[in-house]
Length: 157
Image (spheres, helix red, strand yellow):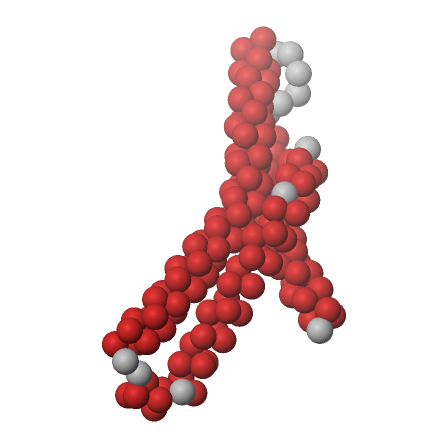
């Protein structure tokens, strides 16, 4: 139950992730272009008037602000995907703990069922390992979404 729900959440947010990464890439490209232009033409700045220097500094500051804002948003979306799968696992883990503990109490107190301490411990370990594996799998899916955007951009060239 944990793995399908976690992956469905990541897949449903695919378009949001793609849009954020595309925006970040576009603003990063503009920021790098301006930075490279500044580095290549640095000697010419001595001939600039104060107004021209201020305009150049303002342009660079605007592009830097736009890139950093989109970079933060893209990072937050990617982290949200990670946390979504983490919380899905945590909620199902809590339900498993609750029902497993209640089944153990019922078995020890009334003799109904077949839950023993060893079985409950094994169940805890399995859920713990599934959660770790799901977290890694989610990270792979998020990285693949980022790679898809990069590959589409490269193929468009």
